[in-house]
Amino acid sequence: MDSMVHTFHLDLLAKLAMSVLLGGAIGLERQIAGKPAGLRTNILTCIGAALLTHLSMQIVVGANGQLVGDPARLAAQIITAIGFLGAGTIMHQKDGGIQGLTSAATVFVVAAIGMTVGAGFFIEAAGAGVLVMIVLAGLGPLEHRLVRAHRVRSCTVRVLRDTKFERVKLALDVEGLRILHHQSFDHPGDRVFELRLKGPASQFDAARDRLLQQSDVIEVSLH
Image (cartoon, rainbow, N blue to C red; front, side, top):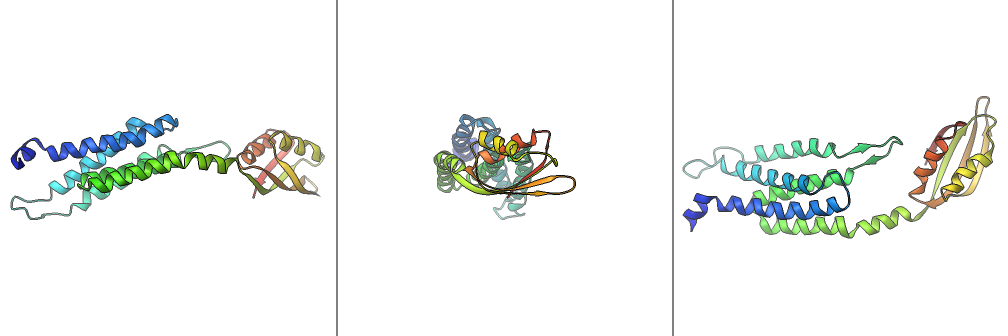
């Protein structure tokens, strides 16, 4: 049996098969959610990390079974490579927001799972895969509710000198934000409204974008 495992590399085959299962399970959830790093990306990331980790453990073993190098050197480069792959999933939006951080983090943790599989720690890798699935699928609804939860934030709106407060208020009303308190300050070249707003967390950025579309609005800052 040992010679068969050695001849057909069944240990490596088992590692790659488990990489496909774990990476595929996580990737499927990402694919359904419509994220940039989906099924194939996560499977290939997990397989690659497992294969390189397995290789790093094999090439440093001499003919007499003694270590002739550091198995961590090749495996350590996986983290660097994953950094470039993860950066490709992060997109900067026009309003200054950032999208894709969860996808980048998923690619990173899938690579870590692949490295764990490649090192031969199947149980640990399976446990980590289950935890990742719970975080991605189970905490998604909670995160969505947090985004929709009402919050109170301060907002500074700088407009042209003759802009009426009602124009600003109308844009905020459309986005479902309520003004708790406001002050206006007139300067030689502009007018500044200091506002205290309450509403769904997801609507603050939308309100800022709506205000910036008005020709008489110079700058909008949320605090």
